[in-house]
Length: 531
Image (cartoon, rainbow, N blue to C red; front, side, top):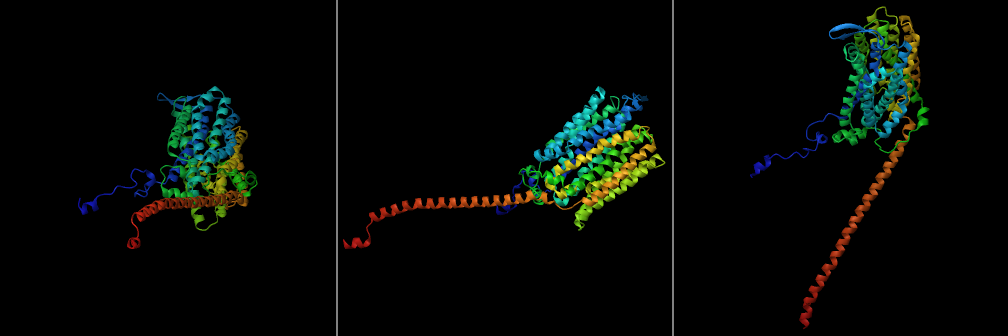
């Protein structure tokens, strides 16, 4: 082979066949794994909200006469269940008893067994329970309430686990962006599930409303299988993540320690900034659950829309919310990057979101035209998409290490409106009139204003002292570990040098014996001369 042929011969790629982890070194830039995690969590939360809100639309078909399409004919079908307005409120709120109960245990489970593992398993179980809902409803109202409570228990762990996931995967400079991408699944799940629930209630199989639960449960199981195959607990455990991304995340996040963490419960429960998030969570969720659970009832009972139209119109506010949420996250990151303090940014964003929402929701009760009411509600609910960038992400500012646990604590209070609000609406609106619903909207307005004041007074943008104590201990342990490692390396080096010296000493006697033998065989020149 000539010299020129040797030079032009292609060299084998040293990274060929070694997987995606080397892709950046071989010239191909891999899609960041943290964004794959964000997309899958987003889809998981979409499914979660579909499983939560489908009953809000389906119950209209279950308890009211409605038109359905059967064999090419449109017929009016009698209500399958004769449940009072108050009992409907109890059924709709049953989910949130379980949901609230699971918040703190869910945070602990995410911390103990890994956020990704618990998130996936819980959503898979909830999907199976959703498919069993028609059987439970036709068995007895008690069976349906029990099933919804259990479903609430399983889905109650998801949001605490979401925080636990991002404590491992989100660099601080991308924290708000990644978090708001995932929570955008709340409005998107609602946008998709409400109109589809309305359509399936009218055109679906097995009485229409039952098909809602079969179909959404099946989608949840499909998501579960994909999650199990593609998502890993942390960058360190991901088999195909690039070295650059792994090092970037691990160097950026506040704590990469794998040692067990002792939760400072007393400090958490007596912390003003934690209570700021609790008040904000309760406020935002009061508005959300009042609208999310009761909005379809308002459209059917007061505005007199049919089932299919109700599903689409009830989804409109969440279309706007899905756009506002991620946009708000990008805006907040930009404000913080441009030297606005974290505290003022969070406070400002939450205040704007809740103030606009409170005004537009209140005006809805006085709208003199159905479509004007829909427009006002769309603005009022849509603007609340920015709220998560104000209070929910704040947990990662004040105590990233305990984010999953704290989210569980705050969501206990945040979930309470899920069963309180439907009960109050059921009690206040027995006659289903517009004037009764105005009282509901006034209560929501007052709750928003109180929440704005309390959050503004107590919010903080700094990591709390009790959240850094273990970090200092961890740093000391790391230093001790490095010193120990250095000592071990020095000892190993000395041992190798000792073995080398010993080997040299063993070789020397052999050489001396050979020299002595040669000396005896040949006498010195002077001795020969004397002879």
